Length: 380
Length: 155
Image (tube, rainbow over all chains, first blue to last red; front, side, top):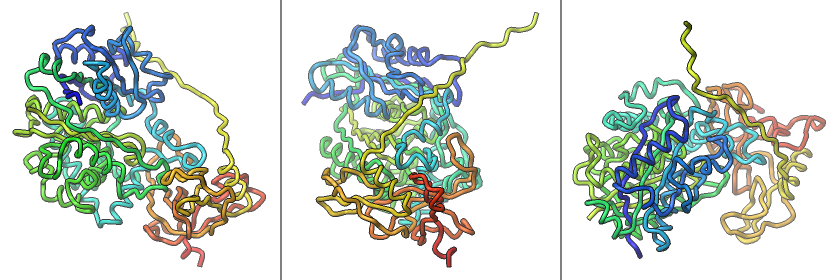
């Protein structure tokens, strides 16, 4: 099998409302920057895979709108209409196939330009689930409550996740939310949908992210320290919330298992040095610790209480601040990949995890972790 | 001279209308709701009862039986959330509770509103029963059940 590396990445920086750039201008900025970072021209890109969302953009097949800005003119180009970690997955597969040697992956989201609750509400089917007017916050609240109940997790544990991620985001110049907060402030924030309060939820964000993948020979020409995709796995769970055990994240665990097998990871807790995960909501980061094999079922809160996943802990999770500090859906999962690559190439600046050699990336689409994408990255 | 106001956005909205076909199983489900009862589809392979009923059991990728099976309108709250904030697309003003409900004897669950004299009385595991609309008000939709009410509120 070919070896594929992440050879360059860039991020726009994230904000609540970007009124200075149109969507194509935003895409053009990150596309130009990632080509510059890789030291190549657009002629050296073989295929472009885009992660965008038609309903958010308000344009059918919205990637066709971005042909000029994403450097795709007259190239092989396609998109995924879900989290952009899947766009990276398809780009990786395209290179593995041997048909292409380099791929540009670019994703964007401008949550400020639409009504996000209406967008997330449309994830629910019109026949059985949509009549109740749920959206992302209330949907994830149902999952958070089920998880709390099953394992005796409390709201303080969830608040500690927020405190950790916000503290990390302070050192991430791209992050949107860069203000530290205390457990008390999270607990006292506006109750939205029990058990979720305002500070348990991600911000609405505008922003874009781009990465370039390349097969081994090209990767070694382009960069001194390529970050290799060692393993990848994805899995999707049942659609109806009521058809799943929401506390279990079965498909996430399966995606991780596939990625670990491919990467030869036997003990993720020991072998993973840093993880960038799309936690989306506070409680959910602890659920991911469990599904990704960082701890046993129901023990997610222990990791946050003991500080294991803090920057100076044994397994730092979300040095970037995660989705709780910037969430330009559907680019969120690609940001995780870009951040993990920065960590392994030693370019993560003030948020650098020392000597990180193996990283985990998790991206997700749909409500309550229905679609799951896991990458394991490493370096020479 | 007055400064020019910035031109920095265009407002728009997209209104698209749909007519979603129920298909056989949802038609049957809603026809039964109109008559005041729940029906489930049974997987031919694992035998599990699915509500809402589907033509396929996703776990087995197997057909479900053509004949839908009546199931009780009582069950328990699997999980719930009390919604305290307003957002576009909401169906009633907050505060209110939405939950995932498992009917007795059924293997899957579905979402619905939960009403209680005291919202604090709702817990995971709380016993609930469908509060049906009057027969002449039912129109073959999920809202032929106004909400699920706590059994203890009925007693």
